[in-house]
Image: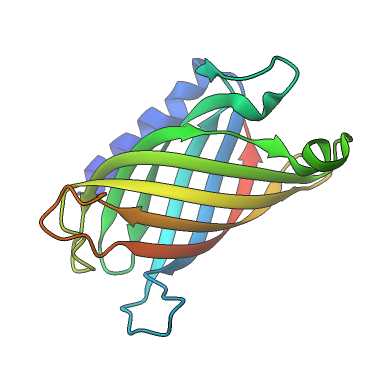
Length: 177
């Protein structure tokens, strides 16, 4: 398993020659957090993503970059030995440009991905194929690095025999490449 993890990281870093710009995202959070007060099996969540700044699909008016769908690939692991390899799309918008027409240092980044999930000793999500949706708010520092806060949800969209799902809260540090 560890060799697979290293191989995936190697491939992700090597793809930077194909895609010249983007962000490496390093996240740390709480896995399986509950907002309704019900019991939970908390675990530490560690996440790495490579977000490419290449548009896959351009949807909507040309003057609005909110509809530029871009690819990402990543790996997520928990302190319960669960591991999740995923790929997907994200879109990114500057909140100042969105609300007042003038760019600022705040960015909103929703994303959708799917991938292979192995529950290890962690929560059983009901399937090997799992989907993840995430909403992220980040602040761009003067050196173009970013600090972000995100809320995520992983589930199998009811294609498995059960679908308990998990929520994740995390902080991230994002480095441009």
